[in-house]
Image 1 (cartoon, one colour):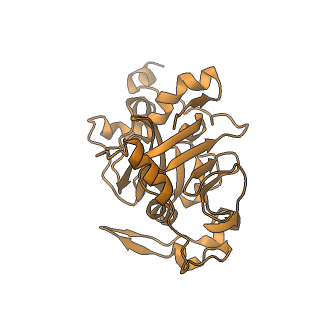
Image 2 (tube, rainbow, N blue to C red; image 1 turned 180 degrees about the vertical axis):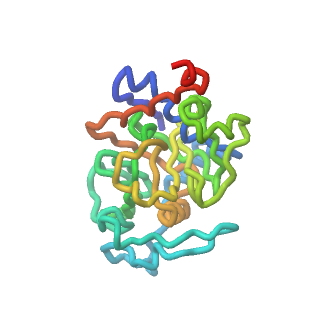
Image 3 (cartoon, rainbow, N blue to C red; image 1 turned 90 degrees about the vertical axis):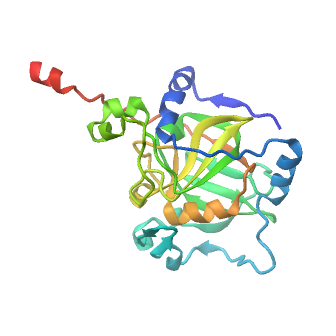
Length: 262
């Protein structure tokens, strides 16, 4: 399968690498490399639904967003009654595009992520789209999956934000419930190259359905955990862009020295 990068515009293309780096994390990468492995991944990408799977439609129950202990961390409950129901996890009819089962379709314009199932349905998740999430459209594959990833803000971001100065040493932020990448991160590759585009969790459930100020494609932590279990390495990802542009750039911070002189 060939992968092609479809930039929204020349200006956006020039910005994409810088913006995407805002999602950068540590990665002990395991990549599905050879054609045979990729073919198996496509076939097994979404083994469910099985005969025992709940094939009902409608929004996931509130228990799907209940407090839970995941590894070493206690995830708080998400008040699903305060979220627009369309952005809650749910099975829907999906027959657009002719995608094979197991394909992940990211619809940035409508703030949805779909995992295509057999039989004309898909599991749908609400998403928040950050600056990097608006930067390109095209196809990729899941090249790496990380449990509770570390977050490494790029120097460009640190230069803009005083609160990130402590990460200039390159050690990054420890995993945890306040980490911007949340409980899981899925890394998109084109060929053997990391695109720096991520599907990741977020502690900021209020940002779902919005154009967020940073990050790539964010899901609620309980949803990214569910997504993580549904798709394997090598799964195909298609990113569709709407007519939106990047949200406004953060203003560079003013140095203390310059502030004193002014």
